[in-house]
Amino acid sequence: MSRLNQPAHPTSDSAPEIELDPIFKSQIDNLYRLNVYGRWLVIGLMWLTIGAYSLWGLRYPISLIQEDFTWAAVKYGLITELIPALGLCLCVGMMTGTLVWQSRNIIWGISKKEQQRLIQQVGNIRKQGSSHPLWKFVVK
Image (cartoon, rainbow, N blue to C red; front, side):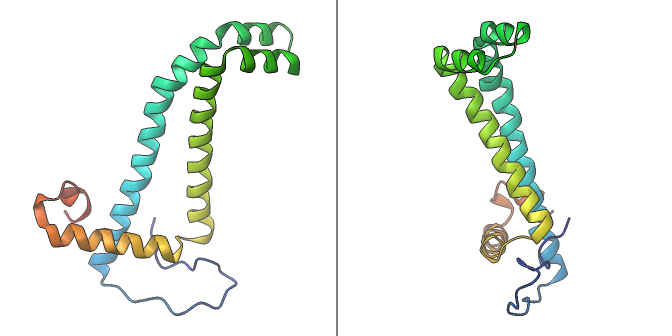
């Protein structure tokens, strides 16, 4: 799952990678993995709360759409039930954004800016020591 040494853009002639200590590199990978799990946890909680409420609020328009699918029924359902429609859009948008972010990191690697942010965060965690809440997950 190490995306740290992959170039941000494979075709670009970028500066050579900074060589990091293998232990520090594994800690950066742990923090990245923790970020990914955290994002998916938030999205799961959003679907269990906001998404469930939104789908419940849209149950009548969904039943109309199941009987006879038309774009007018979709438009009717989203316009007349505005709050549930916005909640559903929020859940879908957050999930789509995270899928795009994670796919970009898998395909092209983590960007230089993101690498620097992770390096700084791991440095701060190591500097604070075992009193940091992420110490046991990142440093071990």
